[in-house]
Each structure stands twice: as C-alpha cells, then as structure tokens.
Amino acid sequence: MTATEKKQLMITACKVRMGIIEGTHAAKSGHPGGSLSAADLITYLYFRQMKVDPQNPHNENRDRFVLSKGHAAPALYAALAEKGFFPASELLTLRHIGSILQGHPNMNETPGVDMSTGSLGQGVSAAAGMALAAKYMKKDCRVYALLGDGEIEEGQVWEAFMFSSHYKLDNLCVIIDNNGLQIDGPVSEVMSPYPIAEKLRAFGFETAEIDGHDFDAIEEAFKKAEGVKDKPFAIIMTTVKGKGVSFMENQVGWHGKAPNDEEYAQAMAELKARLAEME
Image (cartoon, rainbow, N blue to C red; front, top):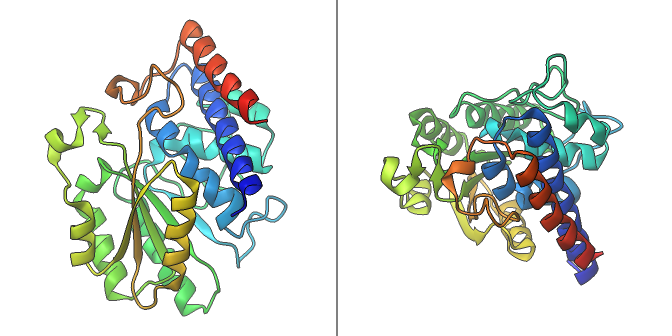
C-alpha cells in the first residue's frame, strides 16, 4: 500500500477507537479493552480487504465477517458506522433498550452484521459453515472470523478448526487477537493456549504471526492467505489490550469496564490529539 493509503487507514482506525470510547461511555458498560486491541484489524478488513457495500448489505456475493469474540462489538459497530452502514450517532445508543446496537452483535437488527455472536467459541463454527456453504454454492467470497486468545480456550473452537481443515476451507481466514489478557487475568495463567501457531498448524492450517497494529504486516498476511489453496488460514496477531488509550493499555481491568466522565475526557483528548497529528 502507498504511504497515503496507510495514513488513511491509521486515521480511520483512530476514529474507530474514538467510536469505541464514545459508545462504551454512553452505555456505561461494555468491553473497551479487547475492542481497542482489535480496532486496526477490523479497520483494515472493512476499509481495504473485504467486498462489502453499505448500500447493499445483504449482497449474496459479499465477503463475510464473524466477530466470534462478540463482546468486542463496540469496535465492529464503530467501523460499520465509519463505513456508512448506519449513522455514527447510533453509537451513543449502545446497549440501550430498543437500540440496534446491543452488547453483542445481532444480525437481525444491525446493518452489516453477518452473524449474531456472544457465546464464546460459537462464532467460528458459524464462519466455517458459511465458508463451506460458499464452496458448495460456488460463490467467490471469503469469510473472516476474529477470535480472542481467551476464547480459544473453548473446545468448540478446536472442533471448528478440525472441521475447517477437513473440508479444505481455503476461503476461510481465522484471526486470533492475542492481546495476552482475558477477564480473569493473563491467558498464560488462566488456561494457556500457547503455542498457538503450532497448534493451528497441527490442525491443518497455514499460519502467519504478525504485529496486529502494523498495517503493512496485516496486508502481507491477508495476501498470503489468498494464495493458499486447500487449507484454511490463520493469522495470530500480537496486540495490546486497550491500544490507543494510555491508561487502558495492558490493563486487565479494562476488559469489561466503561470509562467514567473523567476517563472519557482523557481518552478522547488522547485520541483527538493523535488524530490531529495525522490529519
């Protein structure tokens, strides 16, 4: 990508992070930590990688994205709003009664959401099913699923990985957000999933291990994924939980806590300053 294209992705990702803070602050609940860590990846997907059209969100030939770690919905919603699937003002209704933006994605209510998720471990199974269906129907589309590193402690995830390899789902790309922290603490202490890449390769995946905040590395990994045949692909991305907000970074307490007014003001000031530097 050109320097201009990369800069625009960085600007968009910053705006997505601002949307995450806006939404969780307005809701007085939610999961900012893992949303912020995934913001760059989700930005890249929606603004460079995937074939999606906000004017035709149900196009049969579109690429699909399944947020298997459904609690990171604030990041998905912020990206969808920035892309034009719905007005950004909707972010302020996050988790409110009657809102189209609930605590976890709802494909029946939210434009642009391809799968309802929230119960950890289940989203990737749906993504694998979508990929297999696309194969059978000879659709030229790809399916992307984002999982948390804590989420892959779930057994159903590995059943889905085994299924994906068995059916040679080379149109499926699994991304694991390895920010190192889950709600109860470091993943290495709660129930270590390591070594992640080696396990995925043992399950029949081709893999790439990258810095999940480096757009060049993200692009290279997706290009590699597109060249793989007869195998599913997995990207294991190292990220920082709470990325972009100084006092949230690498702090497990921000897994599922919304910023108060003072914290909101500080977070937005930091992100606005970063945005001003880039624009």
